Length: 233
Image (cartoon, rainbow, N blue to C red; front, side, top):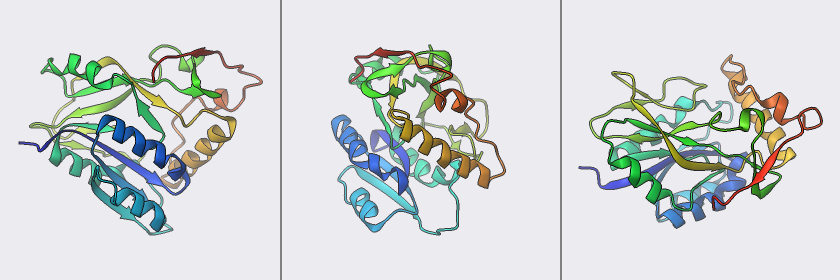
């Protein structure tokens, strides 16, 4: 029997550690245990993570020449899966619905799904608005974020794919009205830094950055953004 109902798993590098305080506040709001992969982080970041009372596992990679890939977080994913019935992929620059638990319990009654896909609204220019045009419209950016662990074995098997796969069969996935709120595109500087990071990561593994919205995101003169106010917090 898993000791926890929920557990996040996440990764952080020194560049993205600017989001760590927000991440920890969100974990505290939800009373959410977490397991964290540290990619070439400072001792200060390591201490802040491992000494946090909600931290249930840490793996630190300190080789300066070893580039991150998405399979690296398998070790903290497995740590979370050993402990919790539901494991939630949460990046360092993401937060969740203010009523996350109420929404989740609506879907928990359905015993047929293996994973849940959530909405992925992206904050744009300020925390009170999201971008809604083009590839930011509707469900275009929805992502698989929540995994059932009971009697299931999951694996991150692709260096450039964010989500996990079941080891022995195709997962049954359910789309939801849960929102995972992304802060990492909020300013032009953040967007440009985000692109540069993932160009570097995927380039190191002989892959092209798979997100095909960079031309749109980084060229607001040609693609003027349409934004809307939101009440997700």
